[in-house]
Amino acid sequence: MAYRYGNRNQINLFPESMEDYISPDDPVRAYDAFIGALDFRDLGITLDPNKVGNSEYHPHAMLKLLVYGYSYGIRSSRKLERATHHNLSFIWLTSGLKPDHKTIAEFRRKNKEALAQVLKQCAKICIKLNLIEGNTLFLDGSKIRANASIKNTWTKEKVQKALKHIDERISDILTQCD
Image (cartoon, rainbow, N blue to C red; front, side):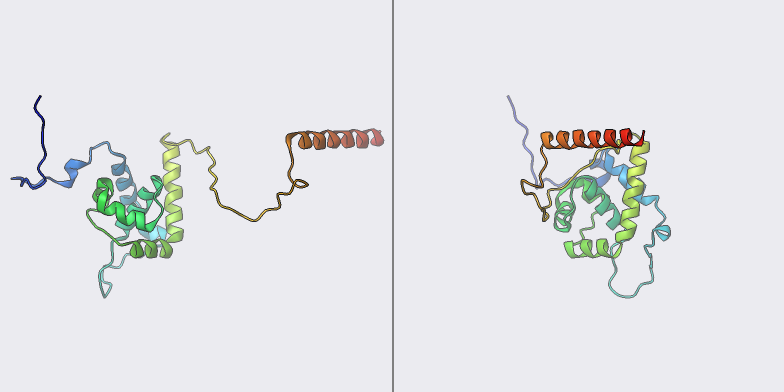
């Protein structure tokens, strides 16, 4: 049986387009269209093409990066930066831009309210399109101070006993009213 071998140094006569690597039905295209259709003035993100100084990354690209990353559970700015270097969907979505983690974190900090609005809109659209149900509650594993002594912790039996006691008290009150 013959094997096929790849050659990373092979030069192509016609360079391939990034569009060729992302299929037409890939979900990343939906995120691209969704963010592209947003009106940034309504979100409170200022677009100033005449700004003096070093040029910034376009807010469309940064917002696409954050929303798409969040949808796949990538929240860390360092992991998002890494994705723009290694993940083809992120490379396509940002058109090859590679913002560093500090830039991503700064954009997120400056546009927190706008990002929250966009994520809510995205969730509503996904629910309308039956892509998600929107009825699942997730909890994180954060540790918080609590008073979980045996006296304050209730077992199933303790809850049933308390409910029975409440029922008895309600019955007593109702009989006294008669």
